[in-house]
Image (cartoon, rainbow, N blue to C red; front, top):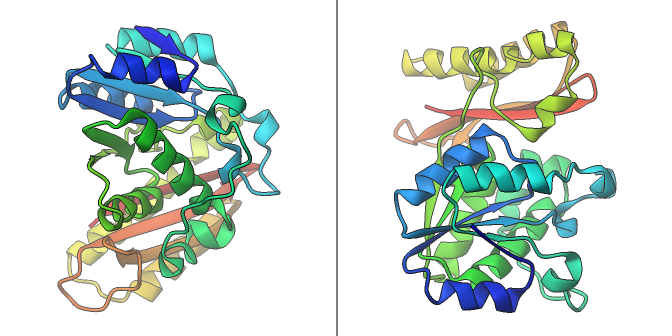
Length: 275
């Protein structure tokens, strides 16, 4: 496995990499990331992982400086997963001059759900991903479904800007109790961790109810929010939306997804299930 800290070094390696798959990350890797790496290997001759903590996607209330950096442990996991190249630029390599050009996603698609609670977040995500795609020029790029709104934004960006890359989704990897694997889970206390699987159970009940024919989406959402609050969560939203654009369902034939975000103690968790 080769480690690259500069754009020029990575581009030289890319020329002989054959069909390449990019998996962008911010590091602090867990089994969900590694599953994506293995999936990427099924679609390419070489997997290229990036590790970059992107300041542009952090809001004023997010702690950029405290985001966990675990490079050496990450390198070991990536090498064991068969990753060929790792791109680990510092800020001066990624943003050699102040970034004044940005990608502004469709306001309707980012004014809701995560975008409503993290203004500017998806602008920062789209900008850095576009830059990574331009640097690496992969044939495919993989993003996990756990960050469902992010996946939707990036798919639409690639489609509308005619970027020659195939975006592939990775299924959410879960613990035995259904909790989606996330770097944030490490901040849960032992008691909180035992409680944390509730968010998945709430989503599962909504999914099963809708599959059984229940179309009272507002009632299902309110019941889940009430249950979470009754068990000491601080829910931000539980919402049934269209998969394509995360807007409210309009027709019975809409492909749907149910999404949730809630804080347990000081840890904010997000999850979703397609219906």
